[in-house]
Length: 155
Image (cartoon, rainbow, N blue to C red; front, side, top):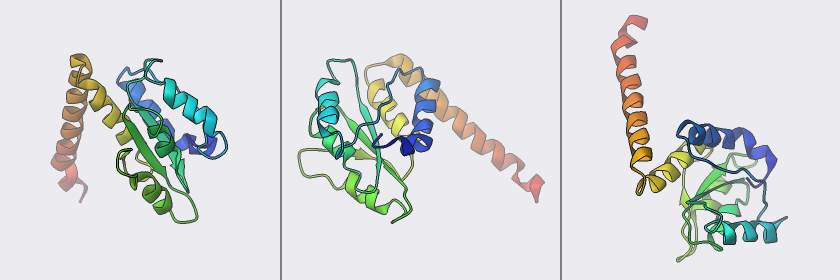
């Protein structure tokens, strides 16, 4: 996270990763206030066992790009909504990366999707995780179909 104020958003990613049994760490590193710490984390992430990185930040939202510039691991950015431009500034800062430094970007405050995208990346080589994701999708589809079956009862 770029700031501890991002925690309410990032908690949804944490919950999703826990549900899937994916270990993770949570840190506050700023692309602007602690650039060397962010760089060091990104440079050592692969050797420390990480398979992907999620970076959440609002406003200028340079954290995901700063991390991606210092690792070849997949980086998934979560633009965090703020009061100034309702998160549009964070979205554009996260998604508009220069050629050669990609950052996968989910929707504004879409932390659960960031966790799911990282899980899908990791599941390429993990059949057990792939099965958990398949089951999660099945359960989600069933929940929608249950709502379809009961919607008329509410009217």
